[in-house]
Length: 191
Image (tube, rainbow, N blue to C red; front, side, top):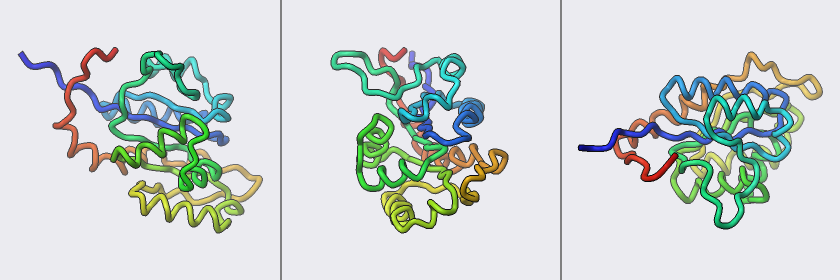
């Protein structure tokens, strides 16, 4: 008797931006597309999130810090990652290879593990004009990171949450994950 096929597992990396509290829209959309989801928040993103609601929805602890040595891994391995909303700071640090928090370490490591990764930037036009940001986006594209299409908003105005396409991250990774879906073995001992 063969074991049942498992659902693919998506990491949603959430950064500290005004629309971060809407990350539940991405989680719900992913679950509707038959993903299991775990959320990794940058340390500054935690106050933007309804952590108990996210944990109830996903069944997994929201992560923002490394686990202690000897602790079990709280999330299954990722089959894909969507970074949304991605801030100026996270985009630049990620492209430069900084891993000074759990979210960045996971993103830096994903490159070496060939995990399909999509990024949905959320920055204002003044930050987007900075040469380091443009270089960082180019570097991430060169690394194979799939880019969302959000247009930067006016400084000090906040972006229009209704224009942020949360589901775009899922659309970007879908072709890469669907090819690998048949090869996803059941998890041994995962809970």
